[in-house]
Length: 293
Image (cartoon, rainbow, N blue to C red; front, side):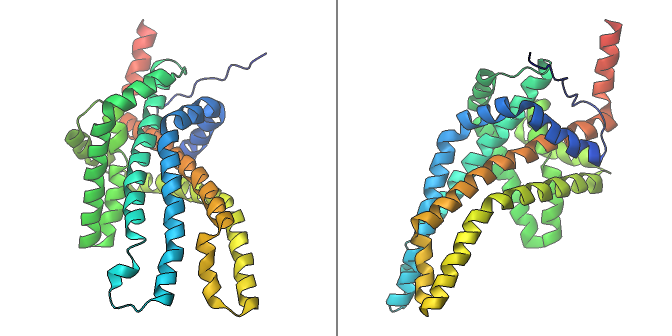
């Protein structure tokens, strides 16, 4: 007999511990539908990203061979093998993270609006309809953070926390790109440090989980390095970047890390509703209306 798990209520205030607990509770209760939807939507782009990662790692071997074997009169010649892969990696990751964020947020939106039920078709339709809006928001956020880095590192960190709310605002309030961007500053006012605490702890947990998938590649790298040292031929160390086993282990590690990143989007929804409830009490008003009905 299947157990009916109670629906998680998003529209209420939570402290740091409750946000973290409910984030992983949501994953535990809905992991099959959630990751299934995620894989179906981002799968082709994820494969593309992993192919580019393989090319990027392999090109490192070419670059070091160029440094070792050629007369380095023209630096552009040395890096010619890696720059196209680097550019392709940045572009493909931007598209991947855009799709991943959209999938997570629209999955949760349907979950909230349909009493815990989810729909792949709904998420797919919303992703197709809103891709360019999300991409525009992502570009705007990225440019803002880069500008913050140029002025000083601290403004960049401040903007990263504030603008982490822009995507949930875009989805759950239906605002346009610029309005979502500006409203994130209004919503977080007076609550920056609390939001920072949640983002930091969740990010730290994801980093620890991600590092577990990096262990096989790290162990293999250490073994290869020990072999190179015993052979007294340091130049062989660069051959590792063209080792199929090393590349394969890294690709496997990156694929799991990309999937784990989506958990941060779930926590951002809990943060959004916590702040929204403190300022607007929309969830409380909805509960009162239901009691009246």
